Amino acid sequence: MALNMTFRQLKVFESAARNLSYTRAAEELHLSQPGVSMQIKQLEGVVGLPLFEQLGKKMYLTAAGREIYAYSKSIGHMLDEAEVVLDELKGVQTGRLSISVATTASHFATRLLAAFSQQHEDVIITLDITNRASLREQLEANRPDMVIMGQPPEGVEVESEAFMDNPLVMIASRNHPLANVKNIELQRFEDEHFVVREKGSGTRSAIERFFIEHDVSFHTGIEMSSNEAIKQAVEAGLGLGIVSIHTLELELETSRLQVLDVKDFPIQRHWYVIQRKGKRLSPVAQAFKTFVLEQAKEFIRLS
Ligand code: PGA
Image (cartoon, rainbow, N blue to C red):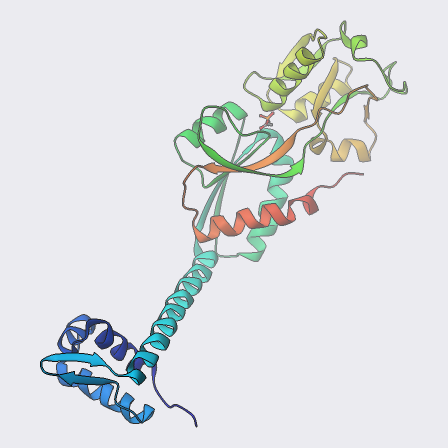
């Protein structure tokens, strides 16, 4: 036997059963009292049993009424849930996304965003590329939806998830005397000069921490705020460099630079996707986060 009840009848019944009153159901649903009464009569007709009984002035649910009430509540919850899911889907196609990434992460983040925007054509994306110190300030002010950086910042409450390794390697020009030496001791570099990133860069502080931990002195030479500039300087013989392997795709392909075989290297770091703690991500931001966690690795090209 098919029960030919409608969502509308169930909705009206659910309200009347919860309130145990046709009048209150009518108010809640902006219907007339006879309108409510008619919907419930029709439902009773479909079910084939009375759903309410009146004892004195008070209304009660019958056994059949209690059964239908339980189902009408679950169906109501499922419809509410469907509405949320559909809203989220609509949001994903039309939202705005504001992402800030560490200078070093820009080497893969641009490809990542390009792929994401191909899948979500109506999303308007803004990308800010800056160093670690400025990312920390942005997180504190809760400006971007999300940040991609080399390590969660200190002193700001954030939620962070690591999604990929970020090894820092030592680079030299191809004709450097150490270019083909194996397993070079770290002490060997005490007298060398390094072309380094500016203070405030995550790469820079990770390198300094590493040398302190290994009790080896570290001499900075020229400072530069761009990884590209550092690679060119190293290639031109201005010093050695230590950079994330993710900045090296092209140079390794064309062998313009040499990664040195240094003991205890690479310096192990990770990439994190980070948001301010307690931030409610928009549907599009949530979709981007999932995309990063699941697919970022595919956008790294190393020879
Ligand atoms: P940066 O990035 O060196 O470009 O600041 C790496 C990091 O966030 O640690």
